[in-house]
Image (cartoon, rainbow, N blue to C red; front, side, top):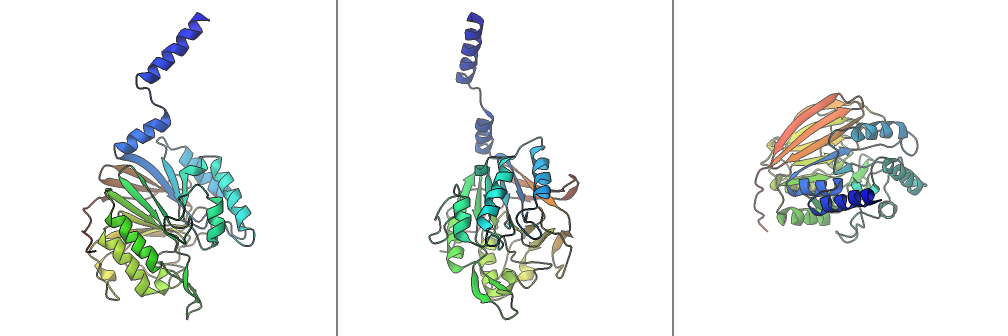
Length: 328
């Protein structure tokens, strides 16, 4: 009994002397501007719900990483959607929760989830009404030396455009909110995520934010102005990376930086390698299931993308550059 008491007392003294838990260590690492996060997207099933087999395979790969992520982000279309979208999202969250606590997961609203109220109800731990009227479909959080901004690309200018495609836009109020978050930030890195790509290359070419090029360029003007670290999207069911620079100038907007749009759309949805616009495409389209690991080390962001067999698909680095000063 005395020996047991001595062991307990020794453990208490060790903690008092500075022993740290795994959670504490993550906070320490983040405070030191060194941490890891993982991104994937489009885990929906082909006809219903979630592609559980593929999602679990990728989550197991992430769980097997020698250095674990502080959190995970999903670029949208977690599920197929429909009248029972709420139960599908609950099931999806239960699957992911087998690997990581739900409050470590930061999803974007996809066009297949569609319902902002249901999305906000299921992911009730996300920040609420940071942008009034958007519930939990537009939010941001800070971690370490980085700010993460998740936007809603599912609202539409009209029901369909002249080509009968969904008329997706990132609205003016979101653009104003985005600029304020970037202008007032003291962070080194800024990551922006939304589901529908600004500059698609494949099967959704002409049917994404590019269906409204003036409004698309207006939001990219903000992203370029503050030279964000990366823009992460989904919707097209492959991996591709393209850089947006002055060669995309148009509609009265002039871009001065090189910003990566990273499409992460292969966590279960049927993949394809359709390529209708290869301008400034650095990698892809790669029609394989995949996930991305991002390591932040001070001013450096290291990106590595792996397929379901842990083969490296892409690797690149972005060094933080001082953002432009807002004219507002």
